[in-house]
Image (cartoon, rainbow, N blue to C red; front, side):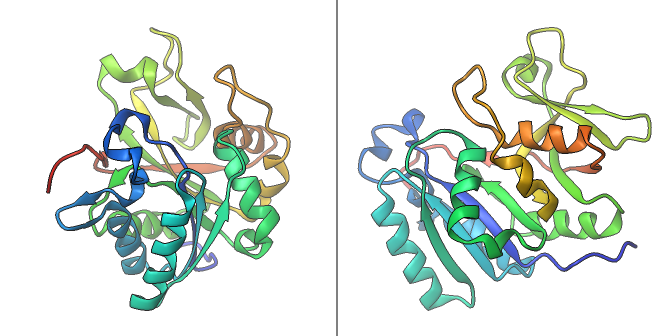
Length: 241
């Protein structure tokens, strides 16, 4: 087992408009939509608690006041420190991470989790990922999933080195060009060394600054990463529960 710093910090991306879930998101931000009696964001926060994560930063934008209110309530009912950073515009995941680095540079001084909040996670999800992270020697860990062939062009695809470490995360490869049937969830354990790459991320063809570009640049410069195939997280779907 490698000797690594214990991961106690997480950055959660909670800024999106949630257009695909309209009209449910017209008045409620997507992470606060209710599933089985509680906000979906609670499932992620509870999983982080079980993994030992105590310091969380939420990146907000759309209906940010509601997420900020949630953060205050969450601090009252849990032992987590929950801070918020408002992303000035929806310009991608690297842009969101840069907003956190600018506001709270301490959060990236040790390894940390970066994750989307679109998922309904099993309680053991983050603990499983962090246990795997501690078992290998690479500095960066990717949560991965098996992808059906029909979804390869619309998702990410992971290119592996011969030793099964990660060489590259290919975002939305053209049909027939995916390097593997394994995709990357938008959930990573990231090292402090990645910070210097975040501010250099250009806009993608989709007009966003994506953290996967920074990861790929870091890997090309000699960084190393491994991935864990986990049960595919369920993306939130509107219901009336």
